[in-house]
Amino acid sequence: MKDYKFMWGVIIVVTSTAFWLGKESEGSSSNVSDSIQLTEKNAELKITVVKLKNQRDSVIASNEIQNMNQKSRIGQLTELIDSLYVMMDRLPVYICPGSSNRFHFQSNCRGLNSCNSPIQKVTLAAAIADKRTICLHED
Image (cartoon, rainbow, N blue to C red):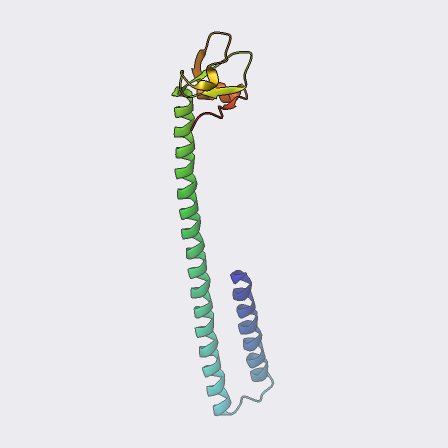
């Protein structure tokens, strides 16, 4: 949206310059005072263009800073997710194969009391990949 404001400002400046230059070509500025006014107007227009360019540059710089901050945050989140995956590959959980769709962080969890087969120790990543969810007795 700010880029459009800059474009409109340039259009206004260009239109104003064309108006004053057109006035000069009509011969109405043969007078010295008209020439001074034209010079003053051109100076004002140049100042306006410089101000608009500065505003545009500050908007661009601000957007670049926001993008850098966002990339930094994305990088931090990516590192966090990677470390969570590493933890999931290392963290042991306990399952009852065949009769349950749950996993347990403790081998003596009361959710495993009704298990009729030998309790298996697997990684959290393997349990999640097997579409198991956390035991309802885990706090």
